[in-house]
Length: 142
Image (cartoon, rainbow, N blue to C red):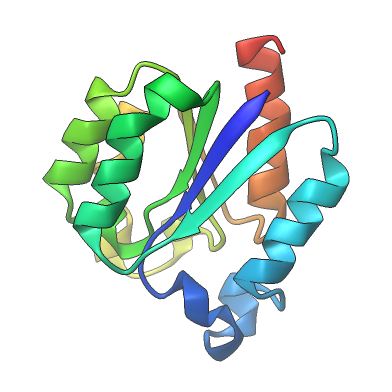
């Protein structure tokens, strides 16, 4: 299975974020962990702080990938444009978050983008990504 993993703003600076919310791994370490845990799959990891770059990746994903994992980060609460791109994308999609959004600030309790995905996982730090791959295996069937 070919899986696109998209990461939004500030996730490139995980080593500077609160450990109790985001865990101890960098984004590169999360990528290595996922590749190690799921060697049978092909992954394309991409991180951007720029909304339009994430949208471009989502728009082209249906032609190249079997599934999409997205951590839109702060854009999950604000980006109608990413939501619209996810609505158009015809492959299976899972939204992930490292921290548990339900116990954080009120403005983080609503994700605009999650409703455009098949489901979402939050609060399990790097394991959120591993859980998403496992679930994509189940719902895509590859």
